Length: 307
Image (cartoon, rainbow, N blue to C red; front, side, top):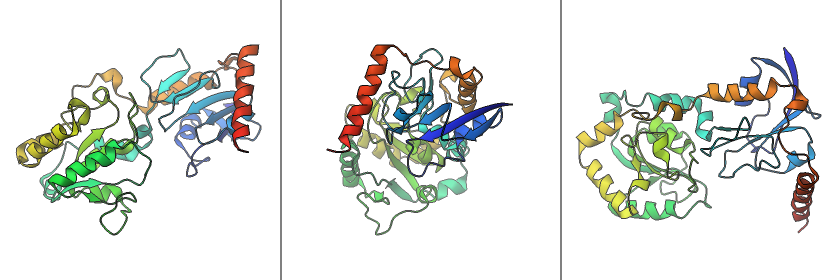
């Protein structure tokens, strides 16, 4: 079994450096040693420590930030693109395995589940820096019926929701808006709404129809304006048959099978990297121009710390 020396850097605070999906994929075929003197790093967007390591760099993002292939050898991100053996699309919702499993089974809804839907719509967010579309839409929805807001942002319940899934299960609709809108950028928000067996009202990824059947949720990108979306919601809210049909529609109905993602793709991608000899796994250029580019970025980023 090949031994690989690996380090995780620049991840979010809650990221588990010793128990995560990347290690799960790698430990089946490699002896992984977490080291401060690594041959490989997997890094994210919450810092610039990665620039200190002149080893094989694998970039991962859960945020709406694209990889810089001048600085990384490989990337795991959300864009629909092909770049030789250097890139794989893995949106962040793929890391929410339990929620995704529930979402894929949501169409097998029971009468008991349907009977729980005695509340209208929920909104569970804490990020105050998201695109204004989220707040604008909430205001329009509240003009039709009150939306229960259980997060830290615009909370109107008097308490913060601690179990999002259990909370959402009581509602017919869930507002599932991303923080920002970029093609391919899909997070866990729509998946968690599906998992709770609600109808997601989605905004964010304009090509979301490549991933999920738009017969199973309300896709704001199919409408000219939010006022038209509200009209559609009123139609569904006042017709139990239409609502039930949406809940009973699988999330992958009529989706091209090549666009349905799986964690096996991540495993194959990582094996393609680590099965090589380490010195042959580098992909970023090492010419004078690229070295200067990297040094300049390192200098600029470190200078900002003192401004």
